[in-house]
Every structure is written in C-alpha cells, then in structure tokens.
Amino acid sequence: MKLSSATVLCIVVLALAGCSAPAAGAPTPSRSSAAAAAAAPVTTPGIVDGLPADCNGLFRGLETFVSPDGSLKLNPAWKSGPGTLRSIADGFGTYDPTLAGMLSADPGVICDWAPATGPSTTFLTTQLRQVDDATRQAALTRLKELGWGCSAEYDGEWCLTDDSHTGVSIGESQFLGRGVWLASDWNNAGPETYTPRLLQTLFG
Image 1: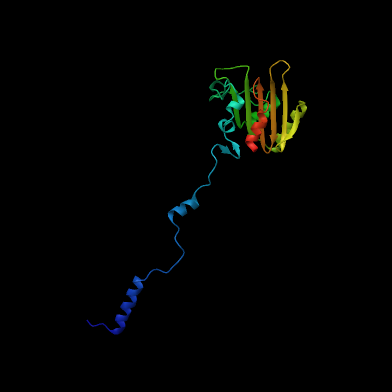
Image 2: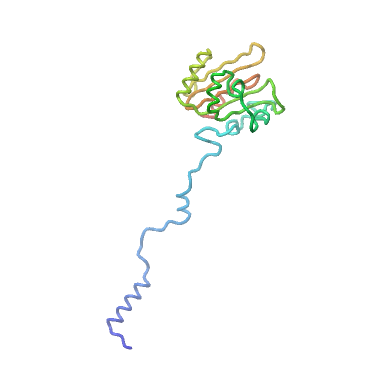
C-alpha cells in the first residue's frame, strides 16, 4: 500500500516524539536524601529534659570522688533494688519530714551510696528532680524555718546544714534553681565539695 506524503510525515513526527528525552524538570530526590530528611532528631543517651535520666548518668566518672576507698557502692541491691520501699524518715534526700513529703510526691531520680553488704552508719542519698516554682518557694520557706544557711549558686539557692559535734558528719544539702531540685542527705559520707561538683556536672 502506498502512503501519502502527509501520512509519512505524521509517522516521522510521532516517531521522533517517542524517542525524544523527557522535558527537564525538578530533580528527583535520591532515597538516601529522602531518608535523611525524614530521620528523627538525634538525642543524647541518658538525658531527659536536659537532666540525667538515671544515677549512672548523674555520677558517671565520679565514683572515686564520692567514695575514694571504694567502700560505698552506687545503688546496692539491698537499698535500691526493685520493690524496695522508701520511708519518709530516711528514704529521700532529706531528714526533714516536710521536705521529704514534697520530694516523695515526684521522686525523679534517687541515688543511694552505701556499702554493698547491708545497712551501715555510713551512707549518702541524692535525689534529682524537676521542680515547679510553687514547690520551690514552699521548700525554700521550709529551709528558712529550719534556719539553714543559704547562698546564691548557679542562678538558684543552695542551702546547707552539717552537724559534726559528735564526731560523725550528719548533714543535708538542698539546691533549688533553674527548674531543678538537687537534694542530698548523708551520714559520715560525702566530700565537702560534693554538691558543687554535681552542680558543675549538671550546669557546666
């Protein structure tokens, strides 16, 4: 069958159109770049809302500082094991029942330094939690009622009491500021620069 000139021209045009490259458009993202865009932000392990999430994070690298002779262990099973009940009298970072009631309402992270073998007259408890302004003010009011000495540190108030007249150091340290409550009580344990060192760890 003989094709007309018009038909031949049409076929040639269609063939050229089918073989031509597609029009240039926006580049298609590669799989790797698309995956990177959808990746979740990286978070620092062991940190929640800017605070250490556990005792290991809070005391990392400070074991020898807290207990130079190694006699105190962090969270021994008899003291801090699963199911261990904490009493208002001695389970939190204070000996004062009023402050203990506030601390127990939202415990946060509680860390015990004590002998691995069992109860002893040498121990140290530190509690780290977030604190709202109302609780902070109530705690500071109570500390003033107790007559503790307080000073400004790290944009907060650091209050301290220590009784060593019996030859045994028994004391407490309470820091409230920057949305944080760092509470510690001890019996014959803990270096003098204990709280300042922890504050440096937290705030730099």
